Length: 333
Ligand code: DP6
Image (cartoon, rainbow, N blue to C red):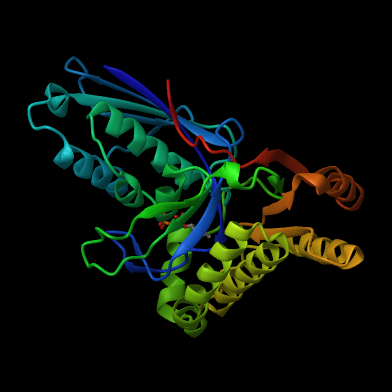
């Protein structure tokens, strides 16, 4: 029995940073993201289940990985516990083969697409119906948002068991079809410290993080939802940039600090502000995850011009994709 799923990355405009439960992966604030198109940056996972397989196998980009990864095992356990106990495949070994078509672990949301894809494929294999975002969350927090297309909110929830910490779509991609995302690959090497380690350290040491999570993010989430629903790009852009800046301020407020952005990242920030000032309004916005690469959210009408500006100002920066957010996030082959 074999299933294949394809899952896209998502780029948060209100960032998730900090857990209140490490094992269940429960966040300290809501987050909100746009899911990219599957044919741009995605993970493809094929799972073979067979009674003749001698052992469980997990390959990532062709390299053998340990199957004893607690996050992988948590996802598997949750899926199996929801399956009909009579299914024969529950007792078979699995061969999981996963591939990213973009740099893995370079702060380009690879774990989000990876675990969303894995859980989607497992759900197909074990015939699970209903919401699977809480299961994808057990693999990587941000993965729960990649289960849906368009604009997605991950509600932090309040239950200690995590049952209400789920993703929910707030608007389909078709709601704002002019929206585009440009990924500027500044560095495609593996990041110095993972998001998991970085946010753990922030929770332990940053005073700013608590203020952000309790005082700032709840208001920003509401303002962002309104900006998206009203298709108000000016407000959308401002909130996105402010949130990215505050997230990196928290990273610097962490001790020892987590420095994810580099000189090129800061030069991109300056370029965006200079461009917006020249245009007398926010036409482009940036969002940086736990790495130096820039994600620019912009409208279709300015893509060509921004592309020319980037190529003029930053000849060494390669643009990975001129992408768009799509409404069909995950497909089964
Ligand atoms: C900066 O989801 O990768 O991209 O839950 O520990 O796997 P874990 O972390 P992860 O963190 C993503 C952090 C972020 C912001 C975001 O995507 O919201």
